[in-house]
Length: 191
Image (tube, rainbow, N blue to C red; front, side, top):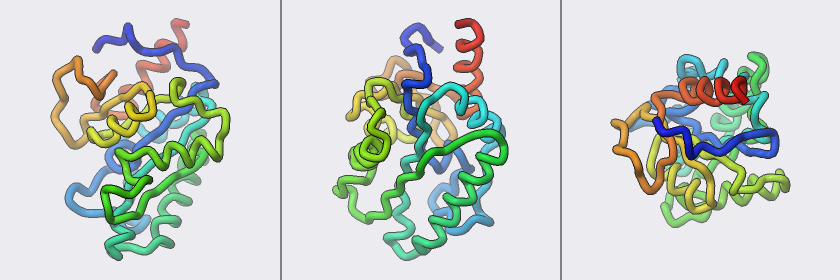
């Protein structure tokens, strides 16, 4: 892993996280439709606790087409996110806000890789500078979202095989959020 090009991160930086496959175990080919189906990935709660001390803002940007398809309700989605944030907070971590796109059409401004959710976050947190932001996700649409906004992009191989690096969309690649957070923490301690 070439970490020479990794930016030095501090409290002026914002962390953008995808949800499914990054924070929780993804139900590939299906949807997480209620809180009882939501299972945190191993190490994620510790990772979010560690990242809480590094980043000024931590936000989640997630495509949730299951609502648009009427497989689940918007209330169920809100309950999942409320419980997710509360669990993270109880473990010493933090998610400042969750942005969800429930639209069916790929052309919707808010559906990743389109950048609407990034702009929503910047409206809510005016100190967000996309050049001082990192996007962590497990799909190329997450990476494209980040690159369109000028972010440093970290790819997690939770559902895809690793890509050959260097890659136009991927700056760093890890097996899990926890693995990546550990390398950031190690860099903090050295710095």
